Image (cartoon, rainbow, N blue to C red; front, side, top):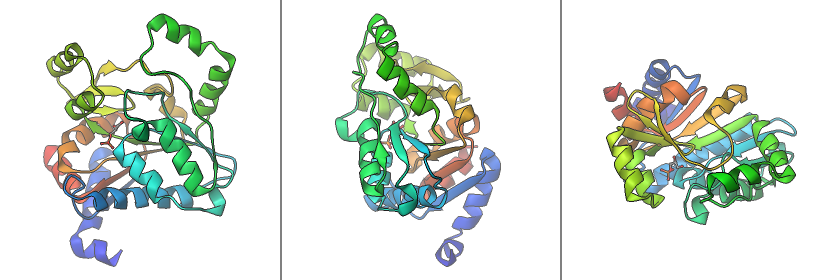
Amino acid sequence: PLIKELFGLTELETRLQRSLGLKKVVVVPGDSDRSDWVKKEMGRAVARILKITARPNQVVAVAGGTTLAAAAEMMSAFPGLRETTFVPARGGLGEVVELEANYIASLMAQKAGGHYRLLHVPDQLSEEARQTLVKEPHIQEMLELMRSARIVVHGIGDARAMAARRKSSPGLLRRLEEDGAIGEAFGYYFNRRGEIVHRGRSIGLNLEDLVNVDKVIAVAGGAAKAEAVAAILPVAGKDTLITDEAAARAVLTNL
Ligand code: G3H
Protein backbone atom coordinates (compact mmCIF):
# COMPACT_ATOMS: atom_id res chain seq x y z
CA PRO A 1 0.00 0.00 0.00
CA LEU A 2 2.80 2.48 0.88
CA ILE A 3 4.58 1.81 -2.43
CA LYS A 4 1.28 2.29 -4.26
CA GLU A 5 0.74 5.66 -2.56
CA LEU A 6 4.23 6.74 -3.56
CA PHE A 7 3.65 6.00 -7.24
CA GLY A 8 0.16 7.48 -7.24
CA LEU A 9 -1.36 4.10 -8.10
CA THR A 10 -4.10 4.37 -5.50
CA GLU A 11 -5.33 7.56 -7.14
CA LEU A 12 -5.25 5.85 -10.56
CA GLU A 13 -7.30 2.98 -9.13
CA THR A 14 -9.95 5.32 -7.74
CA ARG A 15 -10.19 7.34 -10.97
CA LEU A 16 -10.50 4.21 -13.12
CA GLN A 17 -13.03 2.65 -10.79
CA ARG A 18 -15.23 5.73 -11.08
CA SER A 19 -14.93 6.25 -14.80
CA LEU A 20 -15.48 2.59 -15.71
CA GLY A 21 -18.22 2.09 -13.12
CA LEU A 22 -16.51 -0.84 -11.39
CA LYS A 23 -16.43 -2.04 -7.79
CA LYS A 24 -12.70 -2.58 -7.60
CA VAL A 25 -9.63 -1.73 -9.67
CA VAL A 26 -6.12 -2.96 -8.94
CA VAL A 27 -3.24 -1.22 -10.73
CA VAL A 28 0.20 -2.83 -10.55
CA PRO A 29 3.28 -0.72 -11.38
CA GLY A 30 4.89 -0.90 -14.85
CA ASP A 31 3.94 -1.87 -18.40
CA SER A 32 3.32 -5.51 -19.26
CA ASP A 33 4.01 -4.76 -22.95
CA ARG A 34 7.61 -4.11 -21.94
CA SER A 35 8.31 -6.57 -19.17
CA ASP A 36 6.94 -9.98 -18.42
CA TRP A 37 7.17 -9.58 -14.67
CA VAL A 38 4.41 -6.96 -14.80
CA LYS A 39 2.07 -9.58 -16.28
CA LYS A 40 3.11 -11.88 -13.45
CA GLU A 41 2.32 -9.14 -10.92
CA MET A 42 -1.21 -8.87 -12.39
CA GLY A 43 -1.36 -12.65 -12.09
CA ARG A 44 -0.34 -12.41 -8.46
CA ALA A 45 -3.18 -9.93 -7.88
CA VAL A 46 -5.66 -12.40 -9.46
CA ALA A 47 -4.39 -15.19 -7.20
CA ARG A 48 -4.70 -12.94 -4.16
CA ILE A 49 -8.32 -11.97 -4.94
CA LEU A 50 -9.27 -15.61 -5.60
CA LYS A 51 -7.82 -16.58 -2.21
CA ILE A 52 -9.41 -13.73 -0.26
CA THR A 53 -12.86 -14.27 -1.76
CA ALA A 54 -12.86 -18.11 -1.81
CA ARG A 55 -16.06 -19.89 -0.71
CA PRO A 56 -16.59 -23.63 -0.16
CA ASN A 57 -17.71 -25.68 -3.18
CA GLN A 58 -17.57 -22.79 -5.62
CA VAL A 59 -16.96 -22.97 -9.36
CA VAL A 60 -14.42 -20.59 -10.90
CA ALA A 61 -14.47 -20.23 -14.69
CA VAL A 62 -11.30 -18.98 -16.39
CA ALA A 63 -10.76 -17.74 -19.94
CA GLY A 64 -7.60 -18.12 -22.03
CA GLY A 65 -4.60 -16.02 -23.05
CA THR A 66 -1.12 -15.14 -21.82
CA THR A 67 -2.42 -12.98 -18.96
CA LEU A 68 -4.60 -15.76 -17.56
CA ALA A 69 -1.71 -18.19 -18.06
CA ALA A 70 0.42 -15.88 -15.88
CA ALA A 71 -2.35 -15.84 -13.27
CA ALA A 72 -2.35 -19.64 -13.19
CA GLU A 73 1.44 -19.66 -12.87
CA MET A 74 1.26 -17.31 -9.89
CA MET A 75 -1.34 -19.37 -8.05
CA SER A 76 -0.20 -21.34 -5.02
CA ALA A 77 -1.76 -23.91 -2.71
CA PHE A 78 -4.48 -22.46 -0.52
CA PRO A 79 -6.71 -24.46 1.87
CA GLY A 80 -9.76 -22.27 1.08
CA LEU A 81 -9.56 -23.28 -2.60
CA ARG A 82 -9.39 -27.03 -1.99
CA GLU A 83 -13.10 -27.43 -2.69
CA THR A 84 -13.09 -25.11 -5.67
CA THR A 85 -13.70 -26.54 -9.14
CA PHE A 86 -11.93 -24.65 -11.92
CA VAL A 87 -13.55 -24.84 -15.36
CA PRO A 88 -12.87 -23.15 -18.71
CA ALA A 89 -15.18 -20.23 -19.53
CA ARG A 90 -15.33 -21.17 -23.21
CA GLY A 91 -14.23 -23.93 -25.53
CA GLY A 92 -11.17 -23.51 -27.75
CA LEU A 93 -10.71 -20.29 -29.68
CA GLY A 94 -7.86 -21.42 -31.90
CA GLU A 95 -4.97 -20.76 -29.53
CA VAL A 96 -1.94 -22.93 -28.78
CA VAL A 97 -2.82 -25.34 -25.98
CA GLU A 98 -0.89 -23.43 -23.27
CA LEU A 99 -3.18 -20.44 -23.86
CA GLU A 100 -6.44 -22.38 -23.97
CA ALA A 101 -8.92 -21.93 -21.15
CA ASN A 102 -9.01 -25.70 -20.56
CA TYR A 103 -5.28 -25.88 -19.93
CA ILE A 104 -5.31 -22.77 -17.75
CA ALA A 105 -8.21 -24.12 -15.63
CA SER A 106 -6.30 -27.36 -15.02
CA LEU A 107 -3.06 -25.53 -14.20
CA MET A 108 -4.81 -23.17 -11.80
CA ALA A 109 -6.52 -26.08 -10.06
CA GLN A 110 -3.27 -27.99 -9.70
CA LYS A 111 -1.43 -24.97 -8.28
CA ALA A 112 -4.26 -24.01 -5.91
CA GLY A 113 -4.85 -27.58 -4.79
CA GLY A 114 -8.43 -27.61 -6.10
CA HIS A 115 -10.33 -29.63 -8.71
CA TYR A 116 -10.96 -29.10 -12.40
CA ARG A 117 -13.37 -30.23 -15.11
CA LEU A 118 -12.65 -29.70 -18.78
CA LEU A 119 -14.75 -29.05 -21.86
CA HIS A 120 -13.76 -31.38 -24.67
CA VAL A 121 -14.98 -29.73 -27.83
CA PRO A 122 -12.87 -29.17 -30.94
CA ASP A 123 -12.29 -25.59 -32.09
CA GLN A 124 -13.31 -25.60 -35.70
CA LEU A 125 -16.74 -27.17 -35.92
CA SER A 126 -19.42 -26.79 -38.55
CA GLU A 127 -22.61 -25.25 -37.18
CA GLU A 128 -24.33 -28.60 -37.66
CA ALA A 129 -21.72 -30.59 -35.72
CA ARG A 130 -21.76 -27.97 -33.00
CA GLN A 131 -25.54 -28.23 -32.58
CA THR A 132 -25.27 -32.03 -32.29
CA LEU A 133 -22.40 -31.91 -29.81
CA VAL A 134 -24.11 -29.39 -27.56
CA LYS A 135 -26.95 -31.89 -27.08
CA GLU A 136 -24.61 -34.59 -25.70
CA PRO A 137 -25.46 -35.21 -22.03
CA HIS A 138 -21.90 -34.84 -20.75
CA ILE A 139 -21.45 -31.57 -22.65
CA GLN A 140 -24.80 -30.34 -21.26
CA GLU A 141 -23.67 -31.24 -17.76
CA MET A 142 -20.40 -29.42 -18.25
CA LEU A 143 -22.17 -26.34 -19.62
CA GLU A 144 -24.42 -26.30 -16.56
CA LEU A 145 -21.38 -26.49 -14.30
CA MET A 146 -19.81 -23.58 -16.20
CA ARG A 147 -23.02 -21.55 -15.89
CA SER A 148 -23.03 -22.16 -12.15
CA ALA A 149 -19.68 -20.32 -11.82
CA ARG A 150 -19.54 -17.92 -8.90
CA ILE A 151 -16.45 -16.22 -10.30
CA VAL A 152 -15.33 -15.64 -13.88
CA VAL A 153 -11.79 -14.46 -14.67
CA HIS A 154 -11.06 -13.29 -18.22
CA GLY A 155 -8.51 -11.38 -20.25
CA ILE A 156 -9.05 -8.61 -22.77
CA GLY A 157 -7.18 -8.48 -26.05
CA ASP A 158 -6.44 -6.02 -28.80
CA ALA A 159 -8.72 -7.16 -31.64
CA ARG A 160 -6.11 -7.23 -34.38
CA ALA A 161 -3.50 -9.00 -32.22
CA MET A 162 -6.03 -11.63 -31.14
CA ALA A 163 -7.35 -12.32 -34.62
CA ALA A 164 -3.80 -12.70 -35.93
CA ARG A 165 -2.71 -14.94 -33.05
CA ARG A 166 -5.71 -17.20 -33.69
CA LYS A 167 -4.79 -17.44 -37.37
CA SER A 168 -8.15 -16.09 -38.45
CA SER A 169 -8.94 -16.22 -42.16
CA PRO A 170 -8.08 -13.19 -44.31
CA GLY A 171 -11.84 -12.76 -44.76
CA LEU A 172 -12.46 -12.45 -41.03
CA LEU A 173 -9.47 -10.13 -40.59
CA ARG A 174 -10.92 -7.85 -43.27
CA ARG A 175 -14.42 -7.94 -41.75
CA LEU A 176 -13.10 -7.11 -38.29
CA GLU A 177 -11.19 -4.19 -39.77
CA GLU A 178 -14.26 -2.92 -41.67
CA ASP A 179 -16.47 -3.29 -38.60
CA GLY A 180 -14.04 -1.30 -36.49
CA ALA A 181 -13.25 -4.12 -34.06
CA ILE A 182 -10.76 -2.88 -31.50
CA GLY A 183 -11.11 -5.21 -28.52
CA GLU A 184 -11.69 -8.87 -27.75
CA ALA A 185 -12.90 -10.77 -24.70
CA PHE A 186 -14.39 -14.27 -24.41
CA GLY A 187 -14.05 -14.74 -28.17
CA TYR A 188 -16.30 -11.70 -28.80
CA TYR A 189 -14.96 -8.78 -30.79
CA PHE A 190 -16.10 -5.25 -29.83
CA ASN A 191 -15.97 -1.89 -31.56
CA ARG A 192 -15.05 1.41 -29.92
CA ARG A 193 -18.57 1.90 -28.58
CA GLY A 194 -18.51 -1.49 -26.86
CA GLU A 195 -20.85 -3.09 -29.41
CA ILE A 196 -20.27 -6.72 -30.39
CA VAL A 197 -19.24 -6.88 -34.05
CA HIS A 198 -18.30 -10.56 -34.21
CA ARG A 199 -18.57 -13.63 -32.03
CA GLY A 200 -16.60 -16.85 -32.33
CA ARG A 201 -18.35 -20.18 -32.65
CA SER A 202 -16.88 -21.87 -29.59
CA ILE A 203 -19.31 -23.02 -26.91
CA GLY A 204 -19.36 -22.05 -23.27
CA LEU A 205 -20.34 -19.01 -21.25
CA ASN A 206 -21.85 -16.18 -23.21
CA LEU A 207 -21.71 -12.54 -22.28
CA GLU A 208 -25.36 -12.74 -21.15
CA ASP A 209 -24.39 -15.47 -18.67
CA LEU A 210 -22.18 -13.02 -16.79
CA VAL A 211 -25.31 -11.39 -15.34
CA ASN A 212 -25.72 -14.40 -13.03
CA VAL A 213 -22.10 -14.47 -11.95
CA ASP A 214 -21.21 -13.03 -8.53
CA LYS A 215 -17.79 -11.72 -9.45
CA VAL A 216 -16.36 -10.99 -12.88
CA ILE A 217 -12.65 -10.25 -12.86
CA ALA A 218 -11.11 -8.75 -16.02
CA VAL A 219 -7.30 -8.80 -16.26
CA ALA A 220 -5.53 -6.78 -18.93
CA GLY A 221 -2.40 -4.66 -19.01
CA GLY A 222 -0.13 -2.79 -21.42
CA ALA A 223 -0.85 0.53 -23.14
CA ALA A 224 -1.66 -1.35 -26.38
CA LYS A 225 -4.84 -2.69 -24.76
CA ALA A 226 -6.07 0.68 -23.48
CA GLU A 227 -8.64 1.24 -26.25
CA ALA A 228 -9.96 -2.30 -25.83
CA VAL A 229 -10.26 -1.91 -22.06
CA ALA A 230 -11.99 1.47 -22.41
CA ALA A 231 -14.50 0.02 -24.89
CA ILE A 232 -15.25 -3.31 -23.22
CA LEU A 233 -15.21 -2.64 -19.47
CA PRO A 234 -18.14 -0.18 -19.42
CA VAL A 235 -20.36 -2.79 -21.15
CA ALA A 236 -19.01 -6.18 -20.12
CA GLY A 237 -17.23 -5.25 -16.89
CA LYS A 238 -19.09 -5.72 -13.67
CA ASP A 239 -16.85 -5.85 -10.67
CA THR A 240 -13.14 -5.96 -10.90
CA LEU A 241 -10.37 -4.86 -13.25
CA ILE A 242 -6.77 -5.82 -12.66
CA THR A 243 -4.46 -3.82 -14.86
CA ASP A 244 -1.05 -2.15 -14.98
CA GLU A 245 0.07 1.42 -14.76
CA ALA A 246 0.67 1.84 -18.50
CA ALA A 247 -2.83 0.65 -19.42
CA ALA A 248 -4.43 2.61 -16.56
CA ARG A 249 -2.91 5.93 -17.67
CA ALA A 250 -3.72 5.30 -21.33
CA VAL A 251 -7.33 4.28 -20.55
CA LEU A 252 -7.88 7.49 -18.60
CA THR A 253 -6.65 9.60 -21.53
CA ASN A 254 -8.83 7.53 -23.91
CA LEU A 255 -12.10 7.91 -22.03
O1 G3H B 1 -8.40 -14.47 -24.91
C1 G3H B 1 -7.38 -13.76 -24.93
C2 G3H B 1 -7.43 -12.53 -24.18
O2 G3H B 1 -8.55 -11.79 -24.52
C3 G3H B 1 -6.16 -11.73 -24.20
O3 G3H B 1 -5.03 -12.53 -24.32
O4 G3H B 1 -3.80 -12.15 -22.22
O5 G3H B 1 -2.64 -13.09 -24.20
O6 G3H B 1 -3.33 -10.71 -24.19
P1 G3H B 1 -3.63 -12.08 -23.71
